[in-house]
Length: 390
Image (cartoon, rainbow, N blue to C red; front, side, top):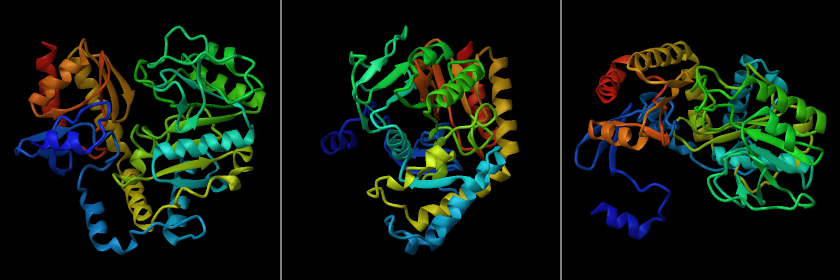
């Protein structure tokens, strides 16, 4: 019944919905038929502290009067407070947080769009270099430009456009995630290198350290901006505020998903002098956010700071248990990839057993559970994974 109404009312996304959710508490979802599921995706990692978290729920119930949008012509104490809290996170990660500047958006996608806007103001008509796969042949994070395969061995998910090297317009150049591939395409026409520091295809779950160093050196040499896309992974999920911080210093960091603990929120963090020099010319059409979201985000940051030890210990327990079952595991903290022969089959088998996981690739399922999840909740998942391994 609900599927028919869904199809007649909503645009179809890449994946059709698997069920209709009527209630969510902690890490447990309840569908319209009363079945319960242990959700180890936390809404794509957005619900960092789980569904219906009592700290967030109690605040929300008492503060709906703060639920209003403000334009960039106005400021609020909550906005200033959250920006200051993020500066503290940067300081704890080795940056000079007080010298950073924060631009709030309503999502990680908008945060990346703002970051690229800054890069193209810094170097107009410059090229954007990123890593494969790119899921469009004509845009990246809302920047409309032809996508060019920079000689990589593996094609992007969709066919890429063939663009003349003599083009005077911005190009999006997508290459394999290697230092050598970056060297082959970054030049004086490059405005920015942007990529996520996580790569669950690798054993460590982080891109090769040489890539960080080479990207930084190339940006310095060719006067480009280095943007770290932490929109899916930052703000505590990996047991640190930022994944890239031990390896490299960025000009710009983007965050999203986990920042709001389920409330739509993103931020573009400007760190270097060259990143900040043109930031006053950013579009004013993106609302500055609302005090309600900012307060919830500060609650989320405070709670995550208290449980970093738990995030790392529970994540290590998961890795150890899965490894004992014979699985190859990659990732950090509570963002893990698990190698399987057929990820979609494993996902379906787990769902039939009351567990929700994400398919990251044909041979990999991924976990991004609430950061405060307990080992007791995860034991059920381990028991079923043991059975599937056999």
